[in-house]
Image (cartoon, rainbow, N blue to C red):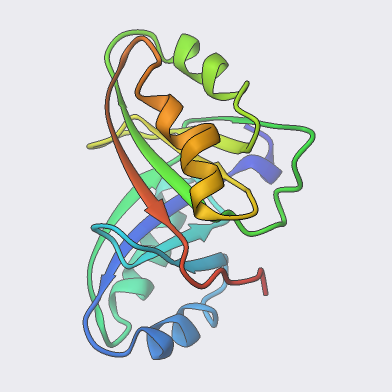
Length: 169
């Protein structure tokens, strides 16, 4: 995977001051974005490596931040992206997708969605992590996220919607 595509994602829960935790996370090298979200997680953190040792080291730093209660990490094994979308724009919705069968077919279908930005095959509880842009959460839910469940092979979806998008720093 080219260096520009080396990505891991950390899904974190925060107890207490989320603003303070975000401020501390932004000080960690290799943390590219921090996005507060609705759903079972409080934050989606993008880190600039998929190399396990580096990712582990960064996650250890994340876990030491006051207020970070728990984390779950997804190391990207494969990435697809939409060349028409600017990945530097903050996503406003994320989807964690469980897949039964071939990932290739699911990834090809997701890639056709109008608000699709990028998707990563990740090991763990979920198989695919996808990001979407749009003008509003409602638009994304209608045009992209709700369509995920209709893809043959998708067995479960969890949606995380940004409530205060953050910019890369």
